[in-house]
Image (cartoon, rainbow, N blue to C red; front, top):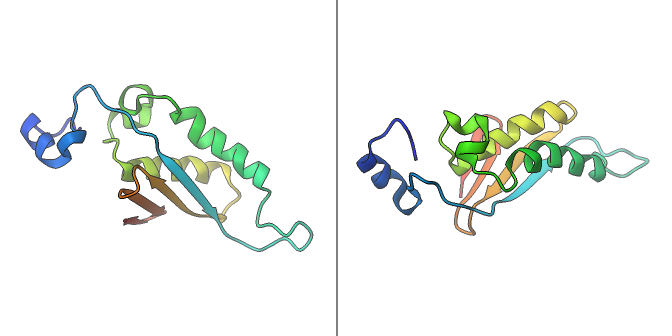
Length: 124
C-alpha cells in the first residue's frame, strides 16, 4: 500500500495485497557471493560468517516484524518484494567484504521472485 496513492489506485495496483492494516508473508531469501576461492579453505568466504551477516542484516531487522510499522526504512518506502530485496542488499553491503556480494533473491511465493544485483533488478 502506498501513501502516495488513493484507496482506488492502491486497490488497482496492489489487488488483494492492498490492505490498510497490512498482511503477512513468509519470505525465502537467498544470498549469493562471488570472488576468489581460497586455496586453503576452498571457499569464497566462510559460510559461518555469511550466516552471521545474514542474521544481522536480515533476521534481526525483519523477522516477525510488520515491515510498515516496525522497520523504519519502510515508513516512507512501499514494502514491495523489490524494495525488500534492496533493503537486504544495502544491509548486507555494509557488512560483507567489499565486492563479494553478487545477488539477493527474495521469494514471496513460488510465482513471485525478485533478484536484485545492485542497480539491476530482475522480477521472475
